[in-house]
Image 1 (cartoon, rainbow, N blue to C red):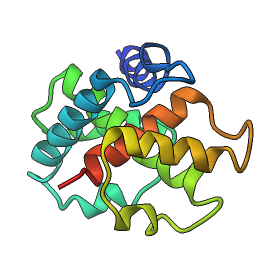
Image 2: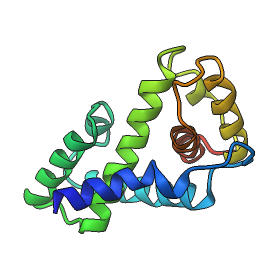
Image 3: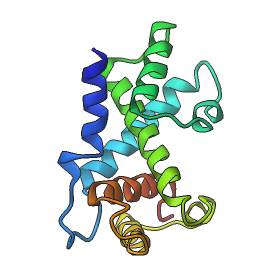
Length: 153
């Protein structure tokens, strides 16, 4: 079961959302999926503890799967799909923090709001400063995360 959860979470940031370099916006499915994942995270995790607790943590996919499975086993009412969504949302957050903080503080992008297309353009422009450091799938994941976290008002 854990391997299925990991596979589902990794699929979020890989195959279905790889964009051609000419794409102007993160795949709408990715933005919608992460928006739903964020909602599941907020609704489910906030029942037992504040959201700052998990948001302040950084784990790889195996670590997040372990944590989310432990919460489920401890009584969190969340099905397998919801668990995969929560892991995917937290992985996208961690990817953003890990990649973007190598050049600047994460407060900088979190201080502005942009459309999904504008976020993708920004992430691509920034990744051009360190060629090869960010795959197109990772750029799409970060742009989608920022689009749901800091959307255009």
